[in-house]
Length: 190
Image (cartoon, rainbow, N blue to C red):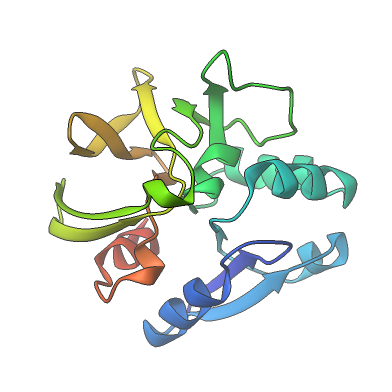
């Protein structure tokens, strides 16, 4: 049975996720407005971009609470970079300005942990259960800590860069920008 993946398409780098998921055989739909939530879908991707803008748009478009309920009810979700920030229950104290977020993944995240655009970099690291994967970090957050039911899946230079809690997979990097498909395959297997 072919899976249908909804990709949040209100802002950010969503097209690359769509291409990757289609290549893996998934049906893909875009979520741009509340009416799009009426379409049937099995999974959700929250892409990179600007988390403050995405959170405000989700709230203004009346999508935030509806997506939160789906995630809490077990729908698999992949959050990359800004998408991870949207999922995070906590932001570093100096960083949390009350921006609307889903707050479903038991992690604390620090936004722009590596600095601005000039702080972007590439790395390779082991991801639990997958092996070594390439990682592209662009204005990336870092996972400061994970809760008791959340597993850190990968680290780079001592910082947690991937975590999983049941149906939720959050990464601080952009797997859609590298040729390796294993992060998306892991997401489709949840």
